[in-house]
Length: 461
Ligand SMILES: [Ca+2]
Image (cartoon, rainbow, N blue to C red; front, side, top):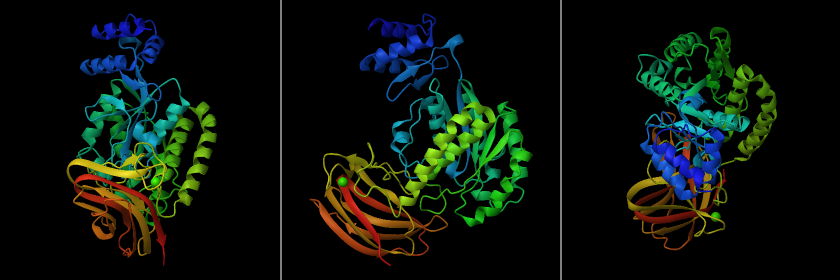
């Protein structure tokens, strides 16, 4: 099957795809292409100004190229706005969001569509989940999302005149050139929780935003703040007025959702439920025929994720059994974005089938870690196995931030700097009361490789 792919290449070179009768022709040709031919096409797409050509993922691995010009159909996209929970703070992150969800695109920093993949250190957001399940419900299309949420910002800071509004508008407008905005997902208010006039101020904000986008009726879907913080009860009560105040809006319940261990951000499991609830609201507003169909998925996801949330006592994946390229749940970087990734090593381990490996051939001072749930004020007995090949320092520690996000606690569990072979460590530590956002971290400095496996944590008081 050489001819179709050759035709595509020629078509791209001429910046004209009119030779193709249907989009399916292109899709089939790309499916049949050999790997090196796909590489060639990708390179060509990059050189070509893609107002004419949209680069997308058709299925698990395969790129898809939509036909340009008159035949180009705008694909749906959602605009994500608000604070950290919408920006993406949910842990653990399911591997599918790291490798990329089939047929889901994200607008990148160059304002171009690319494969949606969560970068190192970024948690999941209900927007990622919305897009994933929207794509599942619509097997014939792709969906994009535009991420403009900013952690820790108030409504005023996100509003016109604030430092973030213009950027959000710029991204949304760039996306609208090749996509069709179908909804705005909003999750914000942790920084406004004492503001009794929030619904009125949000109404003013939405009116202006819709006007600036030229999308007067676009659905605006608001999520409640996490009910695990009782300080948000009145704020959530107040949100009930939103649907009356703002036309074409809805509020998504946060009932039953849990935090990831930091008493602030939703867990990755709860984000699965939350994103599906956002989608359900959207479907009820815009695609009632799909709302019926989606009900069973929502119920299934809710049951499964609540079970996983409940099973999570202290931390996940102690022996790195779960995961793909990264060990599941071990991609947390606190609130940081250092360069060191956690790698799931399926060749060198203390217990099969895998261990966690970090490695760097340039000098680093960095860590990888996982979130710990409900350990503040607790005495812990921790065991683990570590091996270090070359790092100047290799330390397993528990670290925590206080309610003001200041580092307030750090205690070494194991100094494995001299552990040239797999070595077992045991330690007992007590986490202070004020350390409410706690992680178990493998810290390394210098160059080298180090491995971690078979961790147990027992709360012993
Ligand atoms: Ca293992």
